[in-house]
Amino acid sequence: MTRIGAVSYLNTKPLIHGLRDALPEGDTLSLNLPSRLAEQLDHGELDVALIPSVEYFRGLARHTTSDHYQIISDAVIACRGPVWSVRLVSRVPVSEIRTLALDEGSRTSAALVRVLLWQLHKIRPQTTILPIEQPPEAADADAVLIIGDRAMRPETGLYEEIWDLGDRWCRHTELPFVFAMWIARPGVDVNYLVPILESCRDRGLEASETIARQYAASHGLTTEDLYRYFAENLHFTLGPKERAGLASFRQGCEELGLISDGRTVG
Ligand SMILES: C=C(O[C@@H]1C=C(C(=O)O)C=C[C@H]1O)C(=O)O
Image 1 (cartoon, rainbow, N blue to C red):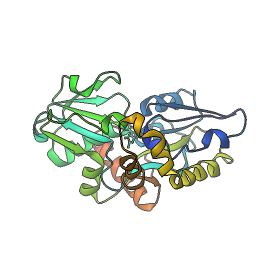
Image 2 (image 1 turned 90 degrees about the horizontal axis):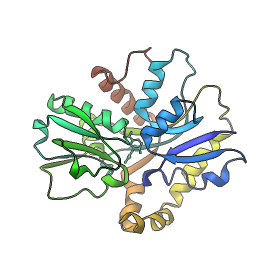
Image 3 (image 1 turned 135 degrees about the horizontal axis):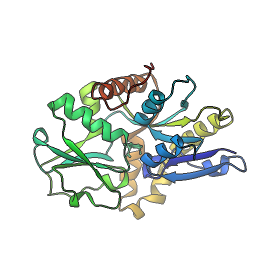
């Protein structure tokens, strides 16, 4: 029996298309915020989860065994340009941000925004958490990082600058960005799961139009826009360029001390 956790946002629908039905009896699939999935995996409440990539680095840094946290699939949430659903919204010019509220659901983008603000503007704002139930407009900070469904339709007219973090990263590094990956805890038998996760991703991508039609209206989006999000903004395969992007992100995080000390992993 394997306890599997996946992200509850729209971005994950193509990855988990048909997954519940494809799992053997006894396996469970639960959906949650990315930050909570990372905690559940760390606490042993899940065996396999789609966790923020920075939490994979942190998991490796926390443990000395080489089999701690395995990437078990090339099915990932990544982008090769604008991602649409990860944004920095700022009431002041970005170079003047002093306080930054970070979406409670995020771990990777919360690190990514700090890496980009440092690498592009040499600033390190004071950070606070934006609780999931609090709307970004209510945050008492110069700027707010928002991710997932609620970042897809930000309030307009309130902000001096809005960054799409996928776009900023890809232009800055000329590399893709990987937000989340399927990770297993050590000792979990995942051999049977590997082909299931990959075929769900493949079939989910083939069905992206149907999935877009299913979820668009309830999220205030058009089917066309949601289809474009799946087909053009997001990228669902971990290839050599994505791995290079991960390595560069990891280095940026390490330079800022965002991954606590541990052994170095390639
Ligand atoms: C593209 C996205 O990727 C995600 C961002 C994550 C993060 O910032 O920790 C984790 C998982 C993904 O949901 C998004 O949420 O919009």
